[in-house]
Length: 73
Image (cartoon, rainbow, N blue to C red; front, top):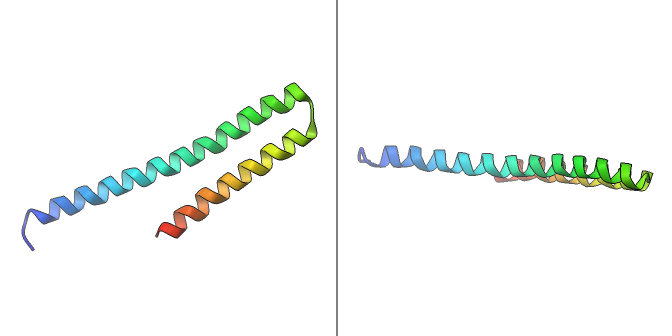
């Protein structure tokens, strides 16, 4: 193993970590957007069905993020 390959491996590892952090951040951002938009939609429509749908979608998104992170390892 030469000395040049070690910094390259560290750079690759750091790039993969940044990409994984971005994916996780985007997934969590999607969950929070669903909650906020759903909250305002449920207040505007004053319907309990919208509230239930928002919570259901947010839970599914959270599970997708949580399960997806563990499948990649």
